[in-house]
Length: 312
Image (cartoon, rainbow, N blue to C red; front, side, top):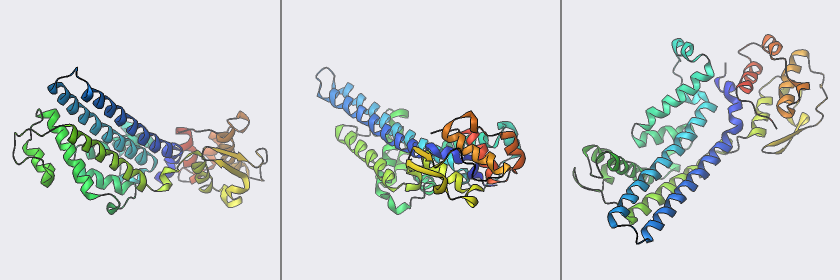
C-alpha cells in the first residue's frame, strides 16, 4: 500500500495553501509594521507605552512566522504521510481515530507540536528535510539570528524581558547579554531587524521550495491521479484530457467511454465526475471498491478523492 496515494487528493490544494500562507504572513507583518510606525510617530503615547507596543509587536511577528511554517509543514505532512517517517502506527491508535486518514492528521499535528516546542535549529532541520531543501540553501547565520529572536520573544513573555539561563543556553553566541536577569534591549532598531530577518527567511524558504510542491494544484494532481491508475495503460492523459490552466482542464470527448472495461469505467467515471460534477458520471463506489483491491492504486485514489473532493 502506497500511503501517499491515500492522500493524493489533498495535494490539489497544496500549492495554493503554500502561496496563501506566504502572502498572509507578509500581509499580517506589514499590518503590524504600519501600526508600530504610527505609534512611534505619535505624540499621544509615552516612551514606556511605545516600548511595550514594540514588545507586543515582536511577539506577534514571531508568532506569525511560527504559524506560517507550522501550517506549511502540516499541509505537506497530510499530503505526503510517508514524510512522517517509517515508524509503524499502533493498532490502538488506529482504533481510536477510526480511520487511517484521521490517524495521519493526528500524527502530523503531534509531530509539529513536538518540533515546535524543541530547538529551532532542529525544527528547521526537519522542515527543510520534509520540503527537500538542502541545508546550505538557507543562510545558517539567519537561522541562528531567528533563533535568538525567538528566545527574546520567550523572555518578553515569561520573564518581563529579562534574560534567563535558558535564553543564554539556547541563544548561544548570538545572545545579546552576558548573564541572567539582564534586560534585553528592545527598540525600533531591534524591531526593524527582527522584521527584516523574518521576512528574509520567509522569502528564502519560498524561493527554495521545489516546484513540485508550489505547483501542486487541481490540474496537476488530476493528471497524477490518472497516471497512477490502470487508465494510463490504455491512454496517455493528454489523449483524453487537456490542461487549460492550473485550475482548469477540459475533456477531449467526455461522453466517449474509450472501450474501457466495466471495472475501468468506474475508475474513469471518478475522473469524469470530478471534472463535471454531473450525476450522469457519478461512480458506483460500491462496485469500484468491490472490483479493486484495497492495496490497488485505483482503490486508494478513489478513497482519497472521497475524503478530499475537488471539482473543476
